[in-house]
Image (cartoon, rainbow, N blue to C red; front, side, top):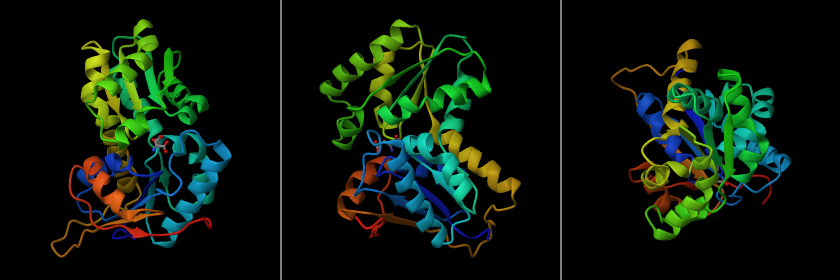
Amino acid sequence: MNRAPIGIFDSGLGGLTVARAIYQALPNDSTVYFGDTARVPYGPKSPATVRRYSLEITDWLVRQGVKAIVVACNTSTAHALEALQDATIVPVIGVIEPGARAAVRANSSGRPIGVIGTAGTIQSRAYDRAIDAVAPGTEVVSAACPLFVPLVEEGWFEHEATRVVAAEYLAPLLQRGIGTLVLGCTHYPLLKPLLARVAGPGVALIDSAEETGLELKRLLAERDLLAPGDADRRVFHRFAVSDDPERFRTVGSRFLGERLAAAEVVALGGH
Ligand code: DGL
C-alpha cells in the first residue's frame, strides 16, 4: 500500500499548485491527478452538484488504487469534504483546514483575518468555521472574487485589468484592517505578487498549498503509509482530465511550475 500513489483532484488546473507542494513535501511518492476540465468552474455551482462531481472523482481515484486523496479545490472541500470522507475507504483531506491553521499562525497581530475565494467557498462559510475551530472568536472578513479564476486562466497575472479588479474586491477587507489574507482558491497563488502589492506590506498572504503538503505527510506517517525512499523506487505523476488535455498541458505547466506530462482523458458521470 505504501507504494500506491496519492490521489489529487481539482475542478481543473488550479489544484496543480497543491500538487507542486505535495511533490516537494513527499518526493518519494507517486501521484494521480484528476482535473475536471469538462465541468470547471465549480465556484458558481450548487453544493449538491459539486458534491456529486466530487464523489464521482473520488470513486474513480479509488479505482486507480490510491492510498489517500487530497481535495485540492477549495470549493469542493467546502461543499463535499465530509461526504467524501464518509463515502471513501482511504483517508481524504482538503485544503481549508490547513489554510485556516496557517492563517491563524500568521495572524499574530490579532487583527481580522481576510478570506477570498469563489462564490461557493465564501457562501459556505467553511473558512469561518475552520478559523473559529483553531482560534475561537477571531474576526473573519470574506469576499467572493469570481473574476479572478478567468483572469488567471487567461494568464493575466500582472495585467492592469487584474489590478483594478483586485483593488475593487480587496477594498472592503482592507478598510476593516485585516492583518492576514487567505488565498482561499487554488488559482489565487498565481496572483500573489499582484495581490501583495494591492494589499500592502502590512498584510500577510496565506496560500494553503504548502500547509496541505505537510498535513498529508503527517497523515501518511501516522498511518505508516509513507513511500519508502529506496534506490529502485519509480516515482510517477499521472494526469487525467475530463476534457481538452492539450490546454491542460499548456496552461497547467504555469500552475505546476514545470512541463506537464500528457494527460489522459477520462469521462465521468456520463457527460
Ligand atoms: N478550484 C476552484 C477552487 O479552489 C477554483 C476554480 C473553480 O471555480 O472551479 O475553489
